[in-house]
Length: 277
Ligand SMILES: Cc1cc2nc3c(=O)[nH]c(=O)nc-3n(C[C@H](O)[C@H](O)[C@H](O)COP(=O)(O)O)c2cc1C
Image 1 (cartoon, rainbow, N blue to C red):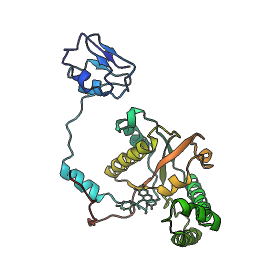
Image 2 (tube, rainbow, N blue to C red):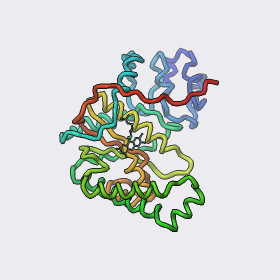
Image 3 (cartoon, rainbow, N blue to C red):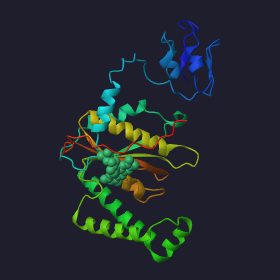
Image 4 (cartoon, protein in one colour):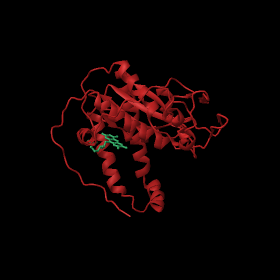
């Protein structure tokens, strides 16, 4: 639990009012077990009178990213599918992981764990097992009986298109030895316990997104990888091979490496439809 130093506290009540769990009673300096350990009380206190339950307090630096900077940064971040064969130093990977402590999490539950696959052999294994799992999955979905059943629930399912995709995917897999992982020097897996009530999937995708942006500011390129997420679904046999606990599911995956290509132009794409109410 964070601890309020009532000697330093000026009773401004900023912490009490900002606490999302309404866990603080400043009169007595008590924090109830409704606390979700988000650290808002620590962050808002002008007197640094709230001691965090974890780590130190640092003064925030004034933000240096302008809206224009952010716009330009995001316009320039493109999916990278072509990587230099250059190892990412371990400290850089750990720097990416360290910053995850700042990323949001539903109810501040922070259920996500990270596995970084970074040896060439392991990345190749991940590539091959993912491709195999997907080909098996495609074959099952497009088989006459199963596709008939699935179409009862999803009438819009285009089985012919799926079959063509499966054939093209399997063909390419024979000639491309890194169809999934694009020879990336590292693959980050964001996994958490399988739960019907938690929001691990949302957390994982948010953490992967922030990580992708942070990595790009370091000159790295990234690629979200839906193939790996599909292959490492619930109770996936692949889990044990990649140190993912059996009761976990991989909810997001990011290829990371130094890019071989540079993009010079901003390619416009349609804005999403918007309803202003
Ligand atoms: C959730 C998600 C999953 C994705 N999965 C893959 C993937 O498995 N393989 C791949 O090459 N690209 C994958 N991508 C990248 C998209 O294809 C890419 O974002 C899209 O084509 C737009 O290009 P851009 O990221 O360069 O703007 C994925 C992107 C997202 C957001």
